Image 1 (tube, one colour):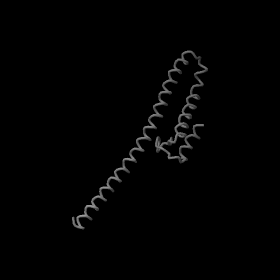
Image 2 (spheres, one colour):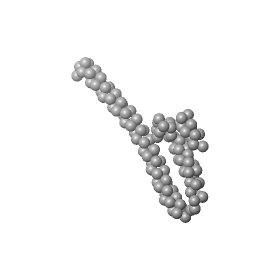
Image 3 (tube, helix red, strand yellow):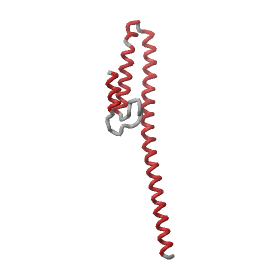
Image 4 (cartoon, one colour):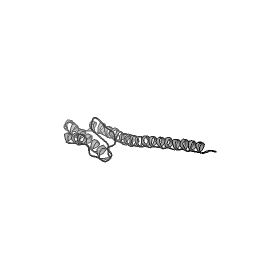
Length: 120
């Protein structure tokens, strides 16, 4: 094998390694996105399950309650909504309109905090 063939093979090997590295970086990025989406979906699923459970309990309680307790339900629902959004935000996800559900990567978001403040 002469020098030119050797250098050609080394160059080709280097290109292959570079391509593999780039593929790994893409897979790593995709994996992070999928894990974040999975966590967000698990949280949403848990919240939906608890909401369904609360609604079932509320229907049973509503049949028993009188008209005065019915007037208090909008306040309770507002409080539950704020708690839900606060929980999502504290778990590291955006709750603002533009990027709802995306991971905040540990940084505070003024828009999310504004949403929480408006709900108080």
